Image (cartoon, rainbow, N blue to C red):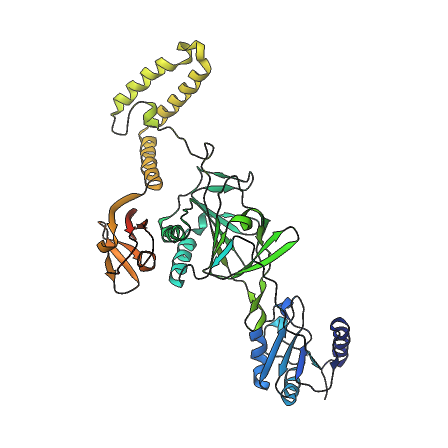
Length: 455
């Protein structure tokens, strides 16, 4: 039987015989070794099946971790011989990296190997935490609002609620968009499970090959839980604690919950690569990464340093938005005479600061355009920082949506408050949850009794 590149094949056979202490042979057996392709260079089980299925009944495929070779076993010697004649050294229709297999017979093949997967204490993974429809809904929102994100060296980042300051390993409270109402259904689901409600979200966008170094999330800024929702692509997250190593495979739509030891004693990160090796029911395999969105939920520990304190300009002048211009002007003059440093020599430093604050307020409110912008900013801040409850309801107040597995309540704007049945029906606890209108900024608060009966 003529072999393509027989010199190279003998070299492979000799090398592998020494490395694996197995007998490599050109004599026909039921076992074949693919000498030039394996897990380490991205060969998948389905690639092997695609090429070899036509040659006979495949008994086993053995993939070796971190190696560029693998094994395939047939039920009959004739089938293995047929595979070698048809495939060895010939174009097989796969991608450039795997377009040609070099094969040899082997007397035996190794036993299957599994990657060690030791889950750090305190780590929990909830698969399918969101549905495919919910995943698409969030992805559509993120893609629409992604142009405003910041770019990091190896990924793109978007913050809500509080912006994480990577330079000082802290948070900034005054440079960030509020958490959008589109995330409210996820926050509700998290609260139902953990009795914990995050107030900060970081969205990371990873392209294939991108990652993040191993790190601890700041323990002085964020409290006990760190949650990560994976969207659009699977990935392996690496955990390290001294010499201990663990690779945890995170599927798209799954929620990772870190608390306790996994939160405070293990670092976590993502190795920058385009493929991940994983255990499957059939044995080791690889998956290719796609563009992945990681939605991380945290709760900022409230301290005097991260609670925003901004004095209202109208309050400085002793007025409100409805005060006439002439009254604003008179109040400014009276206050200026009262607090000016020339009138308060004994406390000139505090008087100077108060005078500067007063002048700043007046410089805005005396200008009609600036005043209009400031009034609009106040109105928007009120919307962003306060949830306006349209109605307080029980389950019996909601209507059944026949088209999908939801309940709903009609809003005065013509929109609907959509309530997933899975969150309120037959839930064995008493809770009140908020649900946003799909058209405006209003919310309803729904009280969930211990025993629910679907309407």
